Length: 279
Image 1 (tube, rainbow, N blue to C red):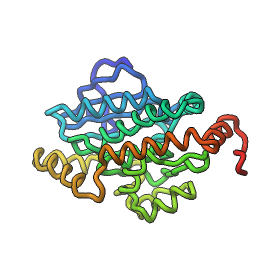
Image 2 (image 1 turned 120 degrees about the horizontal axis):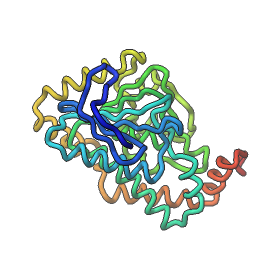
Image 3 (image 1 turned 90 degrees about the vertical axis):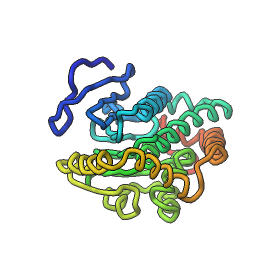
Image 4 (image 1 turned 45 degrees about the horizontal axis):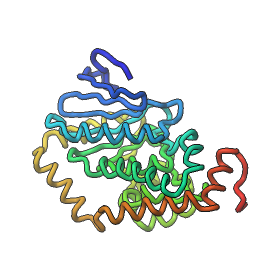
């Protein structure tokens, strides 16, 4: 994406801007804050392998900068992220098991890079979040959502499972809620997301940036080293460590289910707009 000159934030403040070379997102720097914004509202900011690579590179870049003290992950349009896009799903429908392993491994690496980013991260959820997009929100340190946002872990409807995102989503909503929403694929609202702890705050649209700014003020006025070490403390102490073994297990899980008969049937029925065979 090309761009020149200052970028104006929703609050009207101007900031130094730098854009990724791809059209899927942009990075903007303002003082000690980096903002990564998903910029494909026409496809509801859905994932593809290219988008996953862009997000991974973006968080790697902002995480390595000494002048960045906090990171905001945002999106344009009515949806924050709708999971996998249709073109990517059509390609992966014919993947072999080994191709599924490689593909899922890239998604797992993106989530790890977000989760382990040395800077504190905020998910600014302005719209609906589905499937893999739930992993994006869960991998961030904190999340605020508009009161109209909807959430859904829809994988089982397609004969799939939310394997790769599960370490982060279960951490965010807890195992009890995960038992329900992983298994039923129910859509739930922002109030429920707040109740189960998936997001930390729910606000009206006009209050979204006010809440983000409050957190940014707290994060950028605290000791940078203490914040960095404190984040690592939470990661190290919280339940099971997300390590290579756990990541490999989740990658194997999604590769197995994608290559299964029901996995292929679920994806093909979705793409062809027909009911899956198990119905």
